[in-house]
Length: 152
Image 1 (tube, rainbow, N blue to C red):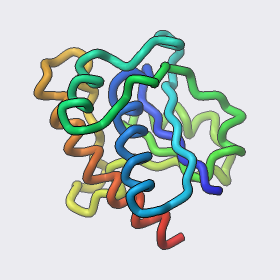
Image 2 (image 1 turned 135 degrees about the vertical axis):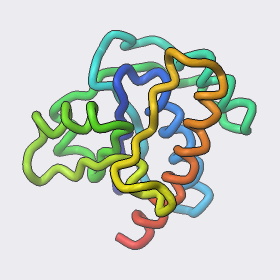
Image 3 (image 1 turned 90 degrees about the horizontal axis):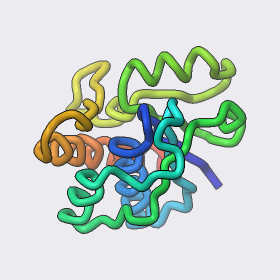
């Protein structure tokens, strides 16, 4: 079984939203892939998803209520087939500690409509509209991830 991990900074907004969306997208296509998420930092470890992220997901038919934040563990490189990060800062942080064989990429690189190097912006310090925009970006990219996993 393939394993995919989605990563952002604190694992309370972007990466858990992407985890929930990707898990459902893959299930709808009948793909047996294990999906989880983590943050490069551990500040929020054990906490639930940001309330605005949770509400945005719920408004669009997703359930993120079981999520609890955690920090990425270096040992996971060997246990995950694909690690998808939300932005270049977190990409750099993981690439500094990744073994050469690790497959670490920007999530939006799987969205054919996204420009080269596109990131999922952190909505934490903004309003609700930022979370809706993140969800749109994540949904588009997760369709591309699903297609990639079907083909490989």
